[in-house]
Length: 146
Image 1 (cartoon, helix red, strand yellow):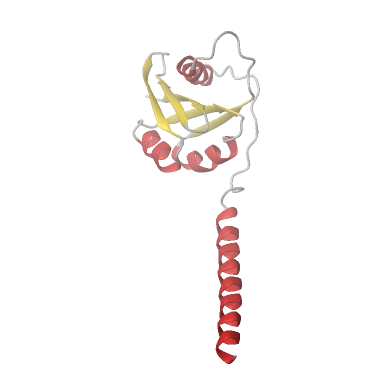
Image 2 (cartoon, rainbow, N blue to C red; image 1 turned 30 degrees about the vertical axis):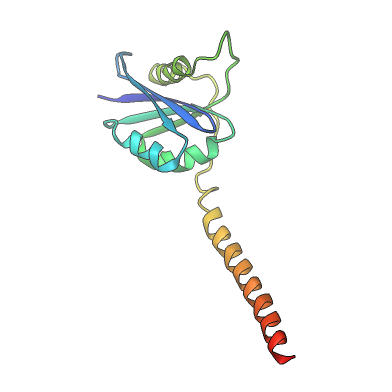
């Protein structure tokens, strides 16, 4: 039985809601906005897994870390908010819209944009270490020569 997951993401926490094929609410959980915790939680949901979240600050990062752990991943445009904010309702709404194929706007995400940053960050860190080593070594050698 397929599971449809709605993810309402924020900078410190995410609300993840799961809906079954017939629309039954199967569960809702809050998880820290942390890659390992999100992946671990998604992996506990039986396959096939279909996931939907809104475009936003974390959407490219979320797409990168979650895409290989679900069978379908949809990023949708931001909807106009009506009434008071309710993360649980929003997460279940995203899951149900995915289940009924009624998502109006889909946003394309390119896999790999965050994956390229890891090697670049390592090269930068190596350059900083080498620069500090050379500067420290130069001063050290100069100090001993005097």
